[in-house]
Image 1 (cartoon, rainbow, N blue to C red):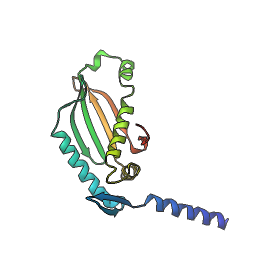
Image 2: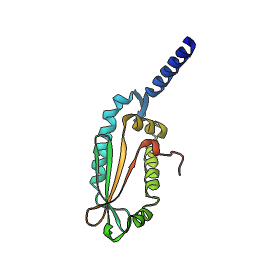
Image 3: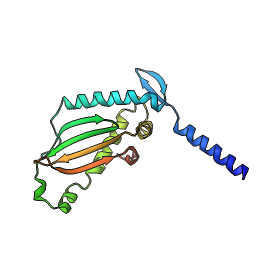
Image 4: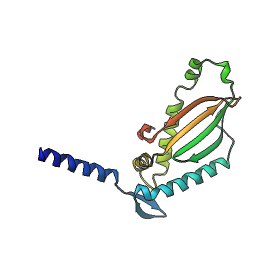
Amino acid sequence: MKRLLSTLFCLLLVVAAFAQRPYTIIEDGEETTFTAAELKGYVQKSMQERVKAINEQLPLNIDEITTLYSTLFIGNALYCNYRVDIDKTDYTQDEINQMTIGVKDNLKENIAFLYQSNSNKMPPKEWKRLFTELGIYYVYTYFDCNNKVFARFIIYPKDIDLNTK
């Protein structure tokens, strides 16, 4: 029994050490090591700067009926708000579900691309681990022409497959 408890305790220590593994960021050719807690401010500031840069370019036509019109980073969530040039009341919920098939998968692929596009600072798996540890997630909301919610997708880092192309 003592041996089992000792083994379980050691396993817990290993898991705790792994969960608290530091992150190494490379900026301007220099490596700096941080804990997730230390990186939280860096990530939040970076997200705020990206949101500001994106919002300066809005509205942005995504396709013939979809426009990205605002982004926000509040708390731990990045919100992307879109307007779709259709009237939700013209469609049944089944029709809406059919129209939005594949949208969440495309959004997840876009997030994976963002992790990969910052791989010069830190490997994509580390970005995913960091965002998971910090509790950062993504909320994509699509509004119809009457400002009624048409569709909403919430995506967590655990949902991201970094092996997609």
